[in-house]
Picture (cartoon, rainbow, N blue to C red):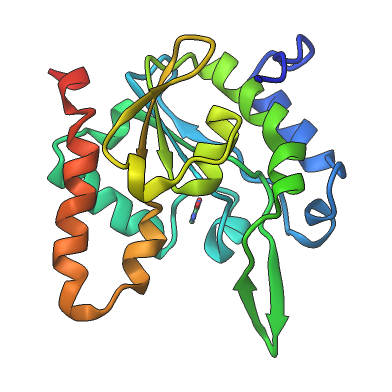
Length: 202
Ligand code: URA
């Protein structure tokens, strides 16, 4: 499954430059820039989301918009220190459609996730996490190389062929879309999933 790490990508700076130039799928042409991950190297946990959103595309940093704020709150509630993690995305460019002046997020297609997969593997090889978290179906597909039903597998660790374990949970954006009356319960369930990784930090 995993694309072999590219021996020419020796640093995150090189990964940024290579993804900036990437046109292996059409998203690279429309996004402002590529967004690679950031955080601690050799972390206990690397969290992988779907793709940069509007704010991330403009700032060039992952999880700085509303989903990122929710993720930060959930990590804190799960007692997982964010500075000790590395946070990234399965797809390195922002896919959107224009509605008037608004840029509306569009989910990446399976072929776009596949085209970006080797960059994610290069990143994992550089970052060397002890374990991974898949935030949502796109990340789970890319990290595990197959479609993973998120609701049936949430809160569970699934192994990759390279031995790394992947904790499956929802994407934080999903929580932003649930009805307000169930939002708190959905948040608590998300935190409970993330707590499965808390023992790594003890
Ligand atoms: N959603 C993601 O999946 N990643 C980001 O970086 C921001 C929002």
